Length: 307
Ligand SMILES: NC(=O)c1ccc[n+]([C@@H]2O[C@H](COP(=O)([O-])OP(=O)(O)OC[C@H]3O[C@@H](n4cnc5c(N)ncnc54)[C@H](OP(=O)(O)O)[C@@H]3O)[C@@H](O)[C@H]2O)c1
Image 1 (cartoon, protein in one colour):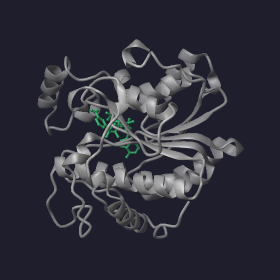
Image 2: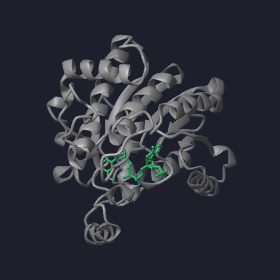
Image 3: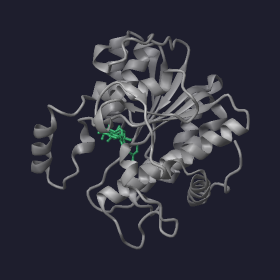
């Protein structure tokens, strides 16, 4: 626990609780999943690569001594069909117990403009649109909390409702990644508001993990340069277990609805989990409603019915 920086808080008892978490096949999601299982949670992990997922599942079973601690399902967030099929597989896996915590960790950074199978700019699709669809499909099963891993990079993002997925130019890694995280934060804010207004017992929390050394940093376009960047930044960035701490904090601690959790150090790069301020744009509720309506129609949902 020391590595996480919140050893002063009580370790949660998650025995009997079901957690569904994307992005657990690598990086900080893998470490968060392992810790949740150590705390007793039963995990359903939707992964796009079953072989990678099996390695993580094996480690979790070994470290917890609980063969039943983890089940894998298949999900590729770069395809809406896969999200729909993945949601159905998750509901079968959780059965009548439902989902206590739904945690969206999966995310991508792409070196050049790429598209999902449905023709969305890749980061927009994987980081913002597919998590919205998955949330909508699973929402009737969720009992307690939804956690969405966003990023301080949302501050680089600008929402252009004429062309949210950069179909007509303006793409750069920074602009597109920033926009994808901003879009995710905006639909999350709107959903949190709707849940509260509807008297739901489910709340939603947002997370910025900090500056964490994972595969996500490998985005220069050159493997050699990636290796140099990793070597130079290693002493400064957080490790994956440290980067998992804000996710675990947001998933398990009592928090005001729609909080934004991240490290307390300068620039929210490193440190202990605390409540962060987000950009003014990310708090704009009118924009959040507009983004939700746009995003829902892009993924084939109705325009924004309350949960
Ligand atoms: N690292 C940082 O400094 C940092 C800072 C701010 C926010 N974040 C956010 O933290 C989250 C975790 O990132 P990380 O740093 O742990 O990166 P990572 O090591 O690259 O892990 C990304 C995870 O997302 C999964 N994923 C990617 N594309 C997917 C797809 N199409 N369908 C399903 N799963 C997919 C990956 O699966 P595979 O194993 O199959 O690749 C992997 O499990 C992301 O949302 C990221 O944006 C990270």
